Length: 216
Image 1 (tube, one colour):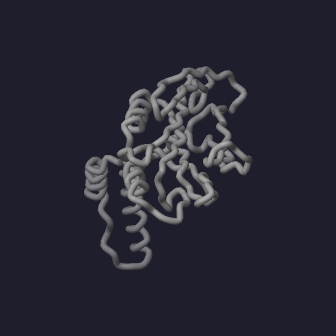
Image 2 (cartoon, rainbow, N blue to C red; image 1 turned 60 degrees about the vertical axis):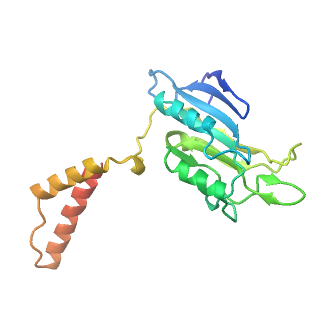
């Protein structure tokens, strides 16, 4: 964690979830109000519906209140996206839900997170909002012994950053507005009639520029 002073408080306590809020200078200017970061852990029982209400409520809370989120999840779900060799229904349901959120999966590699005498698998996930995901460093599954059949997941969180580089989330594109802008641009500056190789390149450049600027 960064060297700057942090302020932490418990956000919510539930049977299967715990969350704390850390106020830091991440993504803010030197004199700006610190942006909160929520760190949470969640257990998803095998019989529980996907996605659980605790998870959807927490994500909504962070979106509405402009908070970054890092959440560690015992998902009891399998999917290739986090290194499992097979997919199951819970994994597919969880992936479908995550695609509607601003969360990204931070798991790397295929090291098992759950090890018992019967089998090994990957069911423990680390999820983070895209804005803070770049600040999670050195994510790995520890080989240190524990008193659990779950292995420790470790990472470093760098909270010292004075400037945020904006990123776009293509899933949240306003497609209707994009089409309107693209139509207006192509109507205003139409590609010329193609009659040579140079002319083709000019037209490609024009159309590409229209598409890019409309998307941006």
